Image (cartoon, rainbow, N blue to C red; front, side, top):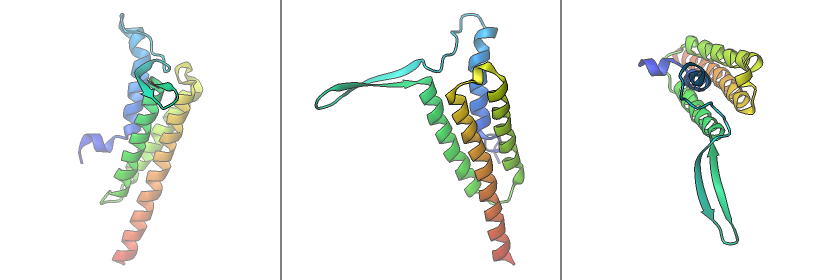
Length: 142
């Protein structure tokens, strides 16, 4: 199994998020991280009025979290062997998210709360899927 499949995608998202806050303190010249920074704008033309679509860093991280959740559920559902260690590691990542949310000022925002909930859904959902798959395999084989 490749290395990237064994590490939870929420661990990578957490690493990126933390590095975006730590990097400006370590390296001079890097701008401070603000989750409300607009990274994409597009003018939507409607019949009666125009609207501006704005995607912020917060929106990007939520979309990234949704994609990661989809990938993790797919990994759990298509696993050929029962592997509790990945689910336990995912729960540990979710607990780490929760600890950071409670204790670190850079994590005191709605974005980090949503990512924390997604990480818990990943851990618990992966464990449930793998447990049901293992039970079904035992019933068919027995």
